Image (cartoon, rainbow, N blue to C red; front, side, top):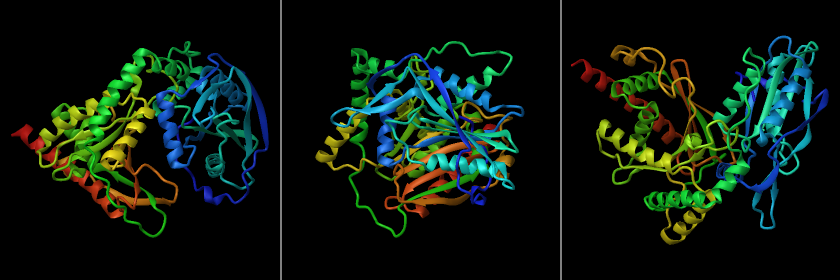
Length: 461
């Protein structure tokens, strides 16, 4: 699954997307069986159902010069053998409950495309990638991996790989990329897999220890959900209901770096505090639903599977100064991370009961997915000066997509590149209109910059 490569304009390709050939790749592997979905898989399945999408992930990238189609087929065969999630399809029992079915063997097709004469091979590959994502996906019959080699002038030049999000979360995808790359390095083949695979995860989750974890997590969710505000009326708007926008900011990156270093605080906690203060209302706590990487759990650290789940964080920060807000947000976030490893079916049943009894706004809050790779642990480079914080360019906001298929009600994906943060916002405009989203983005940036300058000035006083 290559990292997404900056796409060329796929709209420039007017020819139909059709593979020149499909090469059968036979594979076998360990860990076959049929069983319930793991909690991570079930959380993702709930998202798939709600968003009416198979949630394709992956991307495209150039191939190393000299790579042959046979090399790619060998990598695909190796990955199908090594990762049981690549061999996992769904089955449904009599009441429609999904089950995971891991195959012991099978055949998958590797598509080979030839870029048309005169076409930009990169643009054509972007169109292949978009084609893979747009095709309907059969959860029962299809393997959850679509892979295509694009040849330019007869030689393999690019690779597109798209998988269903049930296969893995982002960190699992990065692990897989590293292991595939290691095959061709001096270190040779990666060692045997050691992570707990989803069928094993599901067995533990049904065990007494697993049910104990689920029960404790459910008590946390019950306490948090009861603090949600009352259900409010939606305000319909003309046009597509769900919008996607991007806020790219050097100022937010630089200010967060400064606050993190001065306060010796985790960078994610700084961002969550800025978000909590931006969304908090007088008399009501901020509700944040962070995507939690459950890989700190035993057996999940190096598994290529969907183990991340959303937690729920309730931080009462309205009217507080930044330092106290950061302390309270940190405590609330730790509880959210601890109990994000939960049984989604039990939480959904609890939410349904609370909805009947208390008429709460069960969609309240902000879903937060911190996907940074450069600055997640610590920022590269020296601590910014006050002058650098002031000089960093403020963010620019642009709306990119409007659609009728739903997202989460209000979601932020956080990514980084050298010197900048990109906050990708998804909003149900009937709940949170575009102007409010833009205002929230700028408020987060302003809070970070103000706190960075305050902290730096105190440090030098």
